[in-house]
Length: 439
Ligand SMILES: Nc1ncnc2c1ncn2[C@@H]1O[C@H](COP(=O)(O)OP(=O)(O)OP(=O)(O)O)[C@@H](O)[C@H]1O
Picture 1 (tube, helix red, strand yellow):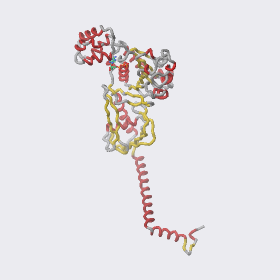
Picture 2 (picture 1 turned 90 degrees about the horizontal axis):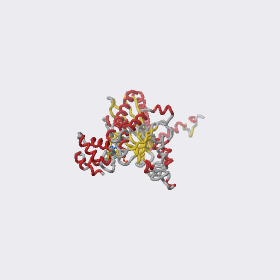
Picture 3 (picture 1 turned 180 degrees about the vertical axis):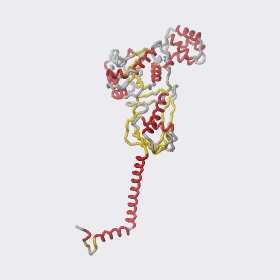
């Protein structure tokens, strides 16, 4: 039915509509509202067209790279921008870390990184736009060494006029090289926080192998075993053997167990992941997760393993057989060590002062493949340490000190010897004269 033909009191429907519009616009409130709506709609349209235009322009003339913090490269890229580029911004965020020097003094270090929002910087004479955004979702984030943390999801989008895949590849290569070089400068220590790994402060100074004095042949034999393992990945894979190696270092306190592991890690360019078993809040499943998701290129260390477990045969009371000082069980530990048969490399070190307290299941072959005893000082070790402490010391003084210490009825550890030599660090003669204070 055609409504324009209907007449109401001789007025057509078109005229009625026109009248209504006129009445509305006569009213200042309605007319103002209508104009505002039209302006709003128009602004929305311009905004939409602008963003579409921008996007099309960017797609046509710009190249972009998008990264989320789930990707290991994210931190490399943010660090790279930080260190090399004169990005112009007043919008900063701060990352603080606890730094511990060799003497154990801790200090707080702050690092500024570009905050959330838009920034720009120059790379290879190109202006690069950089947008950092944060999502409400939490994701598991990998740090430089591959240890995982739960964090809010972040995205960085980098774009530049022109550019090419090669340009971005070069950018990522430069960013990763810088971080890998920095990692190589120090010994990274990771510690476990319940069910995730966390880097503990800034990387420590690497320890040279020659600074750990051991009885003849020990250092070389373990070093060679590790070297052979690290170069035999395909041998293990071809035979379907899990690519793992376990080492047990045992002996009295202060004989260099931890120092030797640190020196080996430094030598092979590895970090250290210390897993404390005496943490009351650590459960079997968390232990399993931690051991099988250790940071990449790290030696995992279970220190003083005897403190958590004692030999089942030696413990009389049935209740004490499985757990002693920690909340994890022996079977939980054994399962975690055996893990799933993954092809990933894992190098596990255990240390103890009391090997005889350990359950034989912990150190059976497959779990521990190489055992080494680090003991008190032999006369040779005393000579080597004395020589290392005093530059250009005479052979005569070395002999005198060795002779003086070899008369003792009691033996002493390298840590005790180190303490004595530090006390007389400016005078080898004084160290010889007071040699008796050592015991
Ligand atoms: N064999 C060694 N050569 C050089 N220094 C050593 C040696 N053993 C111990 N030290 C020194 O003694 C200190 C303690 O050493 P370290 O922590 O490595 O001993 P440890 O055997 O792991 O002790 P613990 O069993 O108590 O954990 C360190 O400062 C280290 O430099």
